Image (tube, rainbow, N blue to C red; front, top):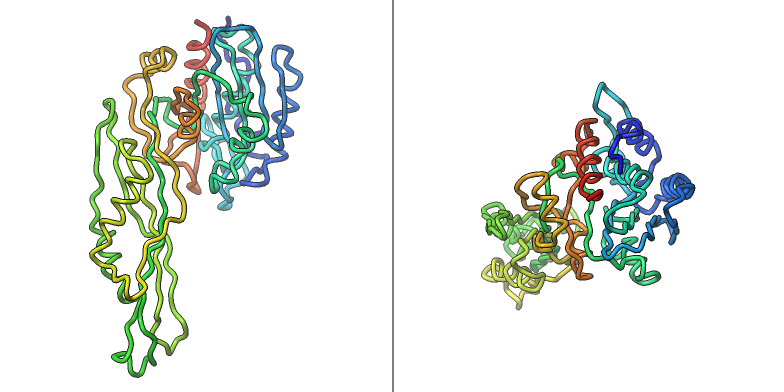
Length: 358
């Protein structure tokens, strides 16, 4: 099997960046992928909503899912792609239209892979999980998700980023007593009562457990605050939304318990104080014992921990061995000056082509 690069992956990435696909608006990019891959003779291409699935059916004993999300975060005056030497700049170039370009070329070129392949281009990864195209497929066409192993082409600098941390969001509410701001001593200011909560968040030092040789790093951040009645009223209610990233040696239930334990000394239930779960996404352990993923690690070097949450969690929940591997710098994701290099695109393509040819 040839592993030659037959297309300009940098130009392909720029073409994909030029097709706007913010979450919930991926139809045009799905059209593009379906049209491009629909004419490839060795692929069976289906579309479920705006999810595009291209499969080989060569009768191999094992199947690999190669997945990438079609959507991007909202634009920041960076929706127009720009090629600057050997770099493509623009919205989604790293997260993850560079990865999509690599997967599309692999789908075209890998006519006789060592495993059967499912190329999965799906919607709504950048928003709440309940909107995910993966859930739509699980509900409507679960057979398309049947496989033994999965590689998610998230940006990882062409290293294996193992597993993923869980993502937990809670709302902590403090109560108070209304009063006129001319006589604040007659009330209790709920916003002021949040001060101790914010100090505790600011002083938080997350655990850094090492799991299968990968060091994870937990984090806690206040991401939204709400409170206030009127400019002349002492507020009787204030809330802060807290995001917690937790390592995969915990599940969502134990992570939630740890957050509640951290803040419980500050809460007075009699005053209406409470912590409520808003959303939770489970973590995923490294899970690199599958022979295919072991070979990928041998080709690319020691794995590192995935500190963010990715759909490796979803694939792991299906019982698949799964990991993150793709072109682009993950620290550039969601930034205004996002970019991906030709070298990274070609490295990712050649690594996967060689992995799947033997």
